[in-house]
View 1 (cartoon, rainbow, N blue to C red):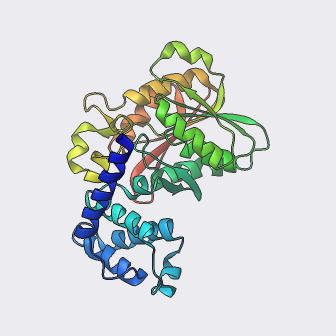
View 2: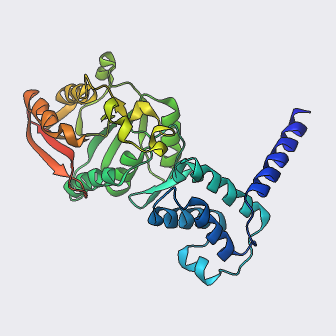
View 3: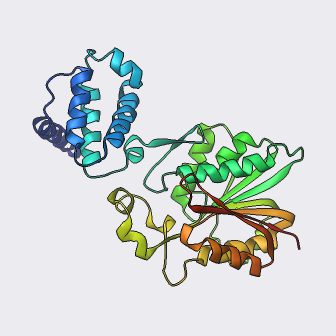
Length: 311
């Protein structure tokens, strides 16, 4: 009985959606025009174009060029309904990556859910820094990612650094499930561990590492008012925000862990809040790290730090 009611409810909802969102025809050119018209005023033109290309390719299998060539092709009702649902979600600012359940990072595909952050281009730059530093390393070495989320950092590193034995930890079981799925999707082996970096008693369970990397929460609570609704309403806050009173709480724990678990001359790489670059560097120097280098991202913001530990 419940199943039957569920079908009736879905049919009713779909019928209401159909009435609300009339498209002149099922032709691709009309669907694309409707898609654009529905989002005008909500997003910039280049964002709308990107959404159209991503959604249409996901649901029709046609890229931007193929959509133009096949603009008179008719879409079936099932595909049309998926596109309408996507448009409705975009109108309430749900990130397109969550709508499609996937994204691309460092030329690899990653499954996503709202249990993990959407990987950012700046984090690709952090990954590239590590790859550039270790791609010619002839020896086996081990690497730990603290707070792996979707697994985008350790999986991308493993895909390019074949001699690395990689461990990745996260405090969220749901995040680790997504990360393991992505590891299988991209055919790499990463040792995932459920672990809270603040549980210092468990630090002894980790071996020494050649490299430690982390992209921890670093957005101030006070910065929320500057953020877009698609971030605030849909992405996991525990992976984003820190208190204004203790913005380096994660970095202090990571630095303490690294000072114990990094091998001599091992390196720590972290993504940082642009407004806390020098404070983070000073903290690392006070804890015994050296060769601290701040690097800017593609937008010219202080976004990452590399430091070595020689004790």
